[in-house]
Image 1 (tube, rainbow, N blue to C red):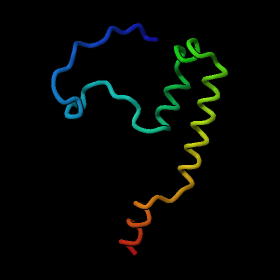
Image 2: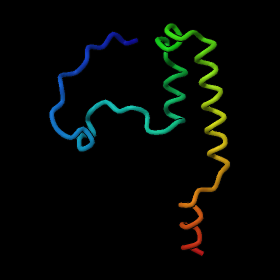
Image 3: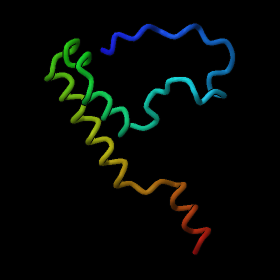
Length: 79
């Protein structure tokens, strides 16, 4: 999409180097990237991309409405 050349091969543990390009860390970030991607729309077509975006948004909404075990444990510790 941006006609970038791939970087030189990395030798070592990529998790230890925060200067390397990162993939989205959350579903919300990934959806934003997909929504902006002209390459995805050209490769898969706008209907497919919109379908994946809609599904991803529904998944994010369901997650946002749930209470995780971590949240329950964390809040019980504070009360």
